[in-house]
Image 1: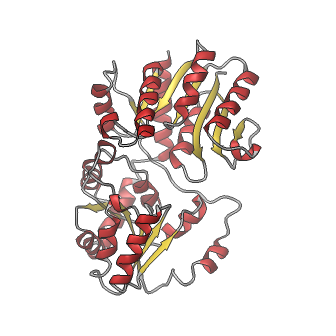
Image 2 (image 1 turned 135 degrees about the horizontal axis):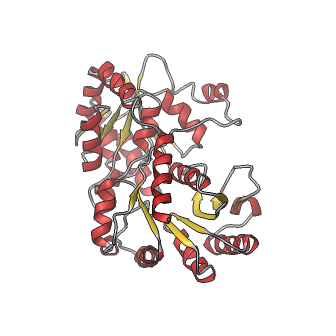
Length: 361
């Protein structure tokens, strides 16, 4: 059985793509996992929270200790850009290792503003040069990456197909009590999980809540920087909005509960860089798996997805989108059921496993 060192500088509680990629790795061999934070009770899953350390240096040291313990690594699976720092060092130690790299974001050197981010692009590009197999998040990104990085082959595509799951620690009754003032039976609830991010046009989303009628609520969930949060609160106060609720980032099970109690999911990205223009959203699938249609911005991947499957409305007017979905709700719900007759998160994992096996031969 192949020994796989899976490294992801991510928090498994909030990172759905990381959880799905680790399922892929588990189907390829015996996995030793290194992450920033992990809740899994697995003796081969190591994370910084379990040793009360933090930071990329501690992450790298942990990976080196685990790598030394394994001794012979057949596959190094590198997930997320920060992990590339550790991945490059591991490649120097385990010279014969096969490298699989997931390039989940599409950050270009010319588009990054800070020195730190530009340096991140250089590190990631060096990792790409060493990778035997590269994975991207949709077909649009794959085609772009082949040309941009002068690759021999297009990267494999692994869509962000994921469903949220409850754990043994989740209590529905506790959530019902916690959100009793927000979840009311006579309301239509719209949910966004991109926080107060203004670059994703959440300011326009909040302003639209002044126009959609007094029976519709908006739940805004996710981490936000203080400047954006202050601006969103300013819009709420200025328009005297009583139907907008701002919530911090919540764990997977709690998010699943909140989405299941809503009627429409918002999937929004900006148009200010290639990473956003060619967005590869897992949020769509999180909403669809809970049976609710979506309203999205008009980024090409989102627009094509909605047009192809009829599971949501894509455009640049939130008010129009929300009202259109409400007026045609039964049609959208039926299309979601049809969609999942031919689409599966399990199949998504298995297809990538098969493609990786072909390229590893």
